[in-house]
Image (tube, rainbow, N blue to C red; front, top):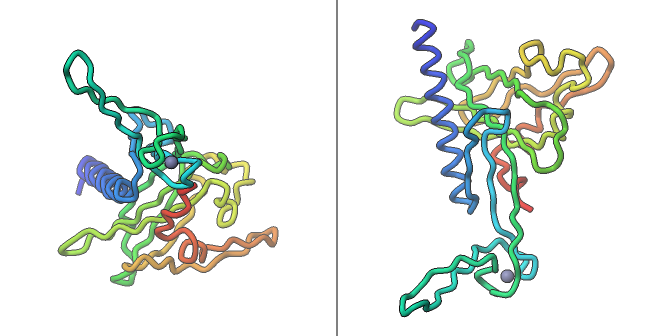
Length: 211
Ligand SMILES: [Zn+2]
């Protein structure tokens, strides 16, 4: 495969991961908005929260008559209690999809993730890392959902080179079934990084996006 074909394949895998992610988020009741220009945040997702019902609800659609015609009016009120203004809950996602590289084991591939933004960006900003396994009959997608504040648990964000994305990347061997095989490392300064969080906390953790 030449460079051009390789680049095209990468782009297709990226779109595939984003499509699968969008479908999953939609199933979970999120509206998915895609960034038009890539500035680091790829998706903004929103849901409506009713502080009275303490649940997510849709906007109440009121029908009224006007000049003899039935009119549809979208309100900002909860469609259950119909009295409370809904709050918009927003989350910002930086999405990275990768197919990884082959290893000496058939069912293990090596993934390197180097996010563009690596600061602690507050509670509303997340990374979604998608590992795609291209099996014969279907592509498998494993999602790892990480709040930006948790990056320091497995990466050293204090390194001066940290923002230079290619200088430091987290490389993880991942098995077909989504299990991250790297346990953790001890840095030269004695600090420990724990990759097992990828299995125990980040894996498919769509719940962390909720209020
Ligand atoms: Zn309500």
